[in-house]
Image 1 (cartoon, one colour):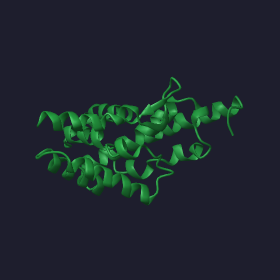
Image 2 (spheres, helix red, strand yellow):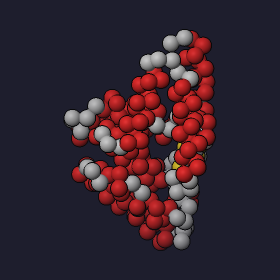
Image 3 (tube, helix red, strand yellow):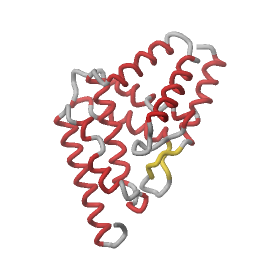
Length: 193
């Protein structure tokens, strides 16, 4: 890759380091998009034994690039995201990818098509992990950072995406148990609801 193109692309995507998400860290600051993507990629690596027939390197790449459009649009929480927001984010992804030289442009364009179709095992793993990372991060954050709708949303979030896998269904159940415990403790301490 041409050095100028390389550094220009990285400069654009540097925004993922400072674009914050709705999620908060356990230390009380907003999480960046890059932090979310990094942990998501690490999660993919750590589940490779659960999916021995899957191309985990492909899943890791999906996890690393899935939110690159947010370098342009910023993060919009799933429960607020509209169809118009999706169109803007898709356009941002297409713009970023179209600026890349071959073979990166084609490889990543094909990867995003696969991710959006959710028909391969790899795409399903990535999407389930994406949903579960959000729930995990919410459970790690102080409950004072939760919006009222998240008391129910955290429990329902990702149910459809994990249904294809016994491992993910079990992970979701464990995360739900942690969410419910957090909510109950907050009620007992009169911190919420």
